[in-house]
Image (cartoon, rainbow, N blue to C red; front, side, top):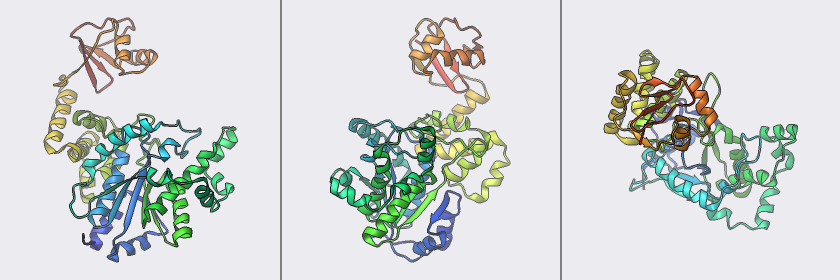
Length: 395
């Protein structure tokens, strides 16, 4: 059995880095628990609604791993059952329902992406992976009704997204009311001491806190982490919108995606997704946006792919974007006659109108020459650049 570490400085370093936004009921009480020497059971749950996670998800599992390294039992909960309903959080309309087949496919990809972030091979205290279908799929109508008696419709309607939908006369489906109940019951089924969640999930986590208290007379800490939003625009990384740096990206693509992030995101990425000591932050920021991003990008890629691949990705980025050379490896796509049809058929850009917009902005090049006309042939051997970082070669 692993020993629980109660080093006050180490615990403070984890809690105070800037990843944690709020702790309920309080940071002081949670700190006392961590210093008590008692082994806590802590979990984070997420619905596999996409086959790719992004860096804002990564920081959650990095934080959970740090708590595991203190000796606590940590659980990665896969919401394979709740994913088929759809979390209404932050949505102005009902989420698209997923099939069981879709969910299983996403789960497989999702687990492989978080493996570099957590030591699943630890012999004494490995992270556990659980699936909420193990208990939710076995619940009867009677079980659900018994749970539902713990809450009122008015409590559910307090959620901002439901208020917005009511004002816009947009439907709210009954399963969306049931979702927080199901997610809340996860805490009861696992019998946890603490739940790690994003700030957008506090409502659901508090439902679980209420249920755990009423059904087992047990207190649960809610540790809410930030969402890594852009400090200027408030925009979030989003798997559903395809915005962000995705964990499924190969090293070169991941490095380039980090370098393409707005300058105001450098400090956000530094704090959340690197573990470079905070004492070095100002020194790195003084390097300027480009070089500071290179340091951050290298550290993040190294975490996922190792030092050798991170160094290769950094050298490749420097060669292509600093020296203006072509990438060492080019994806090949089949010509469809003209450049617009070729780009759309290859799935690089999804609509012809979007390709036309990029051409008008001077954002597409063929053999390093800016494309100025919509009617432009795509010939064998041509190297096409779409935007600042996407290169393909015509077969």
